[in-house]
Image 1: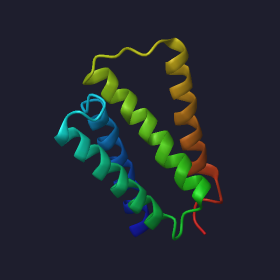
Image 2: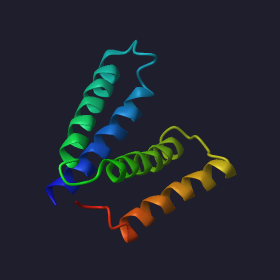
Image 3: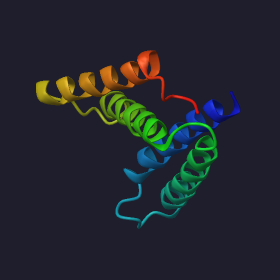
Image 4: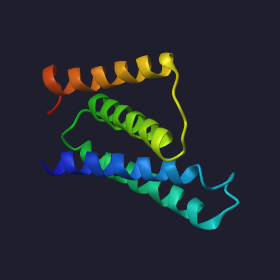
Length: 110
């Protein structure tokens, strides 16, 4: 259970860092730049902690897939970005892949 919490925290840190990245203005603004760097470092550290029992392929698929979906939602609701149909289809496929991994993969924990 601890490793699942580490993975979820890693995802949260990555999403926070990526959101802050949009505010850095090419790293010319200090606070968003610091949040971005600290967030990515924390995310990778927490991801490495999750790898104690979660296979790297599964952990990375979940970390990146869930992160993509959350960042897209932040883009829609915070930055008023509207994904087109191909983007929505692609995100749907990513969500389907994350669900397949979680529901049917026997590789999820070692």
